[in-house]
Length: 279
Image (cartoon, rainbow, N blue to C red):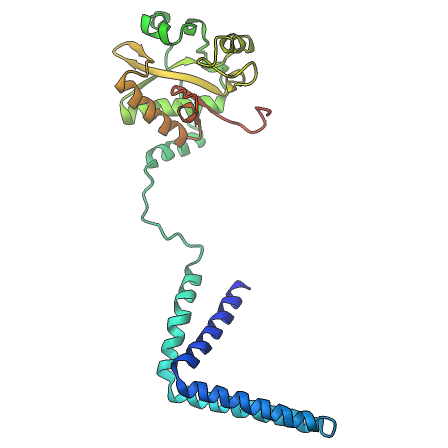
């Protein structure tokens, strides 16, 4: 239907161009109009006497006009064909190409991550890394940034299996592609711990119990390991570059990254499954 409308529009445009470019075309058209008006007036007066004559005259006039137009096109067929091609050609070509990918040579910058996601969805099961020594979470640097981290859960088994696999895939890409060793610093969080953290102020969290994906095993906080030490501080340029890359990789596998929030949480990711968090 759309193609017919476009074709009708182009035919009207071709006719208008014909009138504009060719004086003889205007003469033929004006002659046709004047003839039709005169013929209509005459036939109107004779309508009640001979209806058949009216029909015959109209058919004869149309035949005469068509013969005149065809004769004109035969004499100027090259110019007419060129005008039709210029007006109709681009629209016809666009119609033939509609729905096809015009960027077949485009290379997605996340091709490596997307390939590994496909492998994951086919059934590849990644294994969580060995747990870090507890004393790594008690250093002065870590306690200053996350004072209650020592009591946090880092049990991968308490995370949603699909989210855990996506997060492990992020860990794998970060290490193999970017050279960053990642560590889970907090995964599942009980409602009681969530309320306790919320009471510490908005600089820690704005979410109360069951207002965070941590309670559903669909969120985790992560950091980096460098030279056997846990690096969390955002003042470290190396860590900040890692967080940037971490956010890109996490989003490429379908996770939400806390680094884009108003209250930025660079180490946080979550998997927003439909129907889990009620608003």
